[in-house]
Structures are given as structure tokens and as C-alpha cells.
Amino acid sequence: MKEAAADLGHLLVFAFLFCVGAFMVAPVITDVTMAALCPGQDQCSLAIYLTGLQQAITGLGALVVTPVIGNLSDRYGRKALLALPATLSIVPLAIMAFNQTRPYFYAFYVAKTLTAMVSEGAMMCLSLAYVADKVPEGRRAAAFGVFSGVCTAGFVGGTIAARFLSVSSTFQVATLASVAAAVYLRAFVQETDRGASLLRDQEASRLLFPPSSSPEEASPRLPPLRKVPSLSEMATLLTSSSTFTRAAVVTFFHGLGETGLQTALLYFLKAQFHYTKNQYANLLLIIGITGSFSQLTVMPLLAPRLGEQKLLVVALTGSCVHGFLYSIAWSFWFLILLQAV
Image 1 (tube, rainbow, N blue to C red):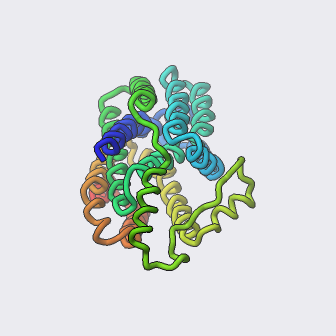
Image 2 (tube, rainbow, N blue to C red; image 1 turned 180 degrees about the vertical axis):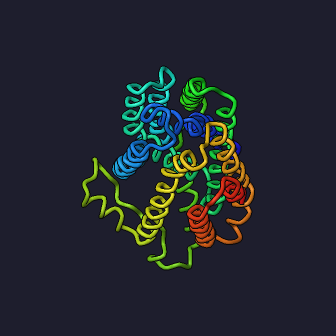
Image 3 (cartoon, rainbow, N blue to C red; image 1 turned 90 degrees about the vertical axis):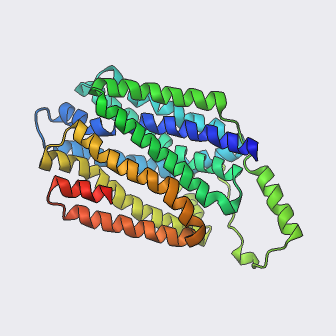
């Protein structure tokens, strides 16, 4: 038990460093994009189109790449595959750390689009799989909440750093944080046995205390992927379990709404209220602090009492309300109040 706790502690440190590097550039990327594509302007349709295109390509690529990486981690280990997104995430940051002119921005744009297919989805997927390998089934929801809270704390730490750094220094420090995350992963995070010992304990428990549920209620087993999946194989995977299918549908529509909102929001704030880097940072800090508090304290307390399904309904309802209130925002102070609640 102590060994598992120590392993999870190292994973949390890695996740914190990774998120610091990844999210440190969030307050400055809008200004950098506007300066590169539409210098001297507060409105730039090209920036919004390119950002939306990047999100679409990244999402479609992750749909294919992430299941393959997850399957490979079952064979070669979580840590071995985590090194891939940890390393790739350094490349686009290093490009912008060198220069922020238009040619370098386009190089960053291409590198970010390609690497994000692997790094964004796979990092979270593999990290949660690592947690699942180390934590018994009944405690996983709370453990996932703690992990998400640490990631949000990394978001807060990166945003605070960006608040006090120049634009060029922000990318340089973010690059160093990402390098530190990759080095820490290599040096301290221990490989898991892909949950083999945990499965043995659970099987022994089932033999001693047979469950009363029917075979149909058992946890679904997804078919393994042995190569890059085709569209038909992806469809088969998504429909192999009714639980998995429903979760995928919920995740798709929630991601569609959140991505669309986040893609346009920062540019809307720039055009409507002339936001700058520090104002972006202040707004993102409110989001990060409240989110970190919720994930680290509220979710671990509510998960055992409400259960995962009811807690998911509460979260999705909150997202819907937030999206509606964004659509009727009429002043910058309303947005700040909205983020606080």
C-alpha cells in the first residue's frame, strides 16, 4: 500500500509539472497569435479559423491515436508510453521560446497540431490508467478527482507564472517545465504491472465472496487493438459495450461544446473588451483556483455519496448553465463573476 502511494505521488508530481508547462502559455497565446497573423488589430477572423481547424484536426487525430497508445501501454507499460506525450509536448514550446515571428508561429502551429494528437489525449488517458492500476475499484473515483485537482493546480501554477513573465520568457520557462516533467517521469515514476496484481486480488475476492450480479452486469471487456484502427474497427470498438458507447457519446457532445466555447472565448474577450495577457491570466486564475478546490475537496467527498453517475449529471448541468450564461454576457465583470461561481 505504501509503495503504491509513493508511486502515485511521483505520478502526481509529473502531472503537475506537465500541466505547468502546458498551460503556462494559455494567457499569452492569444496575443502571440494576433500579433503574428493580424498585427495591431483586436479582431482577427483568420486566428479564430486556424484555432478551430487545429482543434478539429487534433480531435480527429486523437480519436485514432489515443486508443492505439492505450493498447500499447497494456503491452509495454504506462510509463513507457507516457514518455511519448511528455517528450513531444516540448517541441512546439521550444519553437516559440526561440522566436515569436510569423514564420515561427506557423512552425509552432504545425508542430502543435501534430504533437497534440498524441500528447493531449494520451497523457490524461495513460495517467488515469496508471492510477487505476494502483487503486482498488471502489476508490478510483476519488483518486481520479485528486489527480484532476493536481492537474488543475498545475494550471494555476502555470497561469501565476505567466502573470509575471514577459511573453518570450513565458515560452522559455514553459519549455523548461516540460523538460523537467519528462526528466522526472524518467527518473522517479515507476512502471506498473498494468493492474495484474490488483486483478489477482479482485479475482481472489470474487472466489471467496461470489458477486450476486448476473454475468450481463459484469464490467465490459473491450477488444484489443493490434494495429492502427480503421473506421469500421473504431465503430466496432465504440459499440462493443453499451456503457462505453454512452460514455463516448456524452464525452463527444461535452467536448464539442467546451472546445467551441474555449476556441472563441479568448478572441471574443480581445475584440469586445480589449483583454491583454495579464487580464487573461487573472480570468484563468479564477477558473483554475475554483476548479482545483472543487476537484481536490468537493469531488472526493461527493463521489462516494452520490456515485459517479449522479456526479456526472451535476457536472454536465453546470457546464450547460455556464455555456448559456457566457452567451448573454454583457460586461467583463459579469464574466469574472461567472468564473467565480
